[in-house]
Length: 521
Image (cartoon, rainbow, N blue to C red; front, side, top):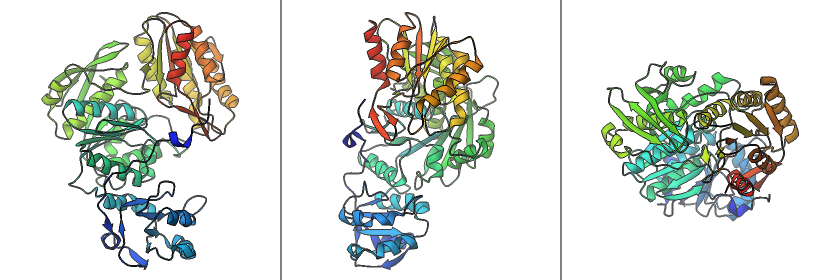
């Protein structure tokens, strides 16, 4: 593996043309205060990060954990900043730099809390001017639901945008993502570019961290969707109650008009009760009482078919191009969201009668040839995701199911024993390897996983192999025609994080290479 070059890191996207905004108008609009005026100034962008700051930008200098953004004023000036907005501490730092004498300075205490609204104003993303915006949150299924939403919207004739963990889509243009949900300045610039390219509907994946860190501030969603809640991210949140509260923030009147809540997880009812906006409910479980109900009608390695029943009893039949009842549930949630946004149920039924047309990168993605074992590469990284995906693979596999996975370093370690235990209980052979070790000792991570798997199922055949290139080749050697391998964790990602360096790596490419070397491709 080689370190990923800087030029291969996805760019921050902005509109090609921005109508200049008078700084005085912005100051008046948000009732800010000039500490220093230097004559009329117009801005064409806004940035909190000097790595992306461009000529004509307002530089918003914010306090950080280690240093204040104002300490980067020299670089901001060199790159063409036309004004600085900061708190009192930041403006004191900026005022001491002689090279910033020509810049107007604007006082704003707690700039982070206002950044999204400021960026929306600069890029013209105001209510009444926006495409339809759909937001999906939840532990698992956010990306899949967003892709399925976008796929159905295209089949309905919409020009679509998408921003997710995997990719950004802008009216057919595809760009690899940087973060699940970008910072608010980047998000507002991205939405402005989508508007510029004629997008009429946009699907946005919204993480709990994005809500806690105010990354979707300045956006107002036509419909928000909730998939599920399960054990994850307890390195960021004290407990599951705090984690749930972080996600419920999306279902407040300042962020969304309406919502759809999936009741399939144990937290579904609590989430619906906590919502502060009107919601309808959805479920694919027969033991749950919901407005919308879904029933899986068929499962094969290339697709899952389903029947969806609306609140008035109408039904539609369609399919998703991927295995798993949970994937069909994501489609059902997406359809309910579209109806809440004003699309007709009959119109949707007609558009997707032959199946939903969507490609979900790294989501139980089948990388198999015409013969040999089925190999699925998946982005799942929680106990709940492992269980659902293993069950889906089992349903379409005649032979053995081999599970291959590793765990993230420097991330929620409390879920690792459950990830290993769930894997052991749902597979026939288990191979433990490395994922993103980051600054942790990979051998220590593997030991936790192996010990937990053996405790859960002592008789299971378990292998510990490092690095993952060797692990997938061993996995392929342990299975044959009619068997399946689920490689969970890397999914669509094209790198591994090893001690802070992004090394070029593709699980999909490694899996295909292992199959080819074994004579299956």
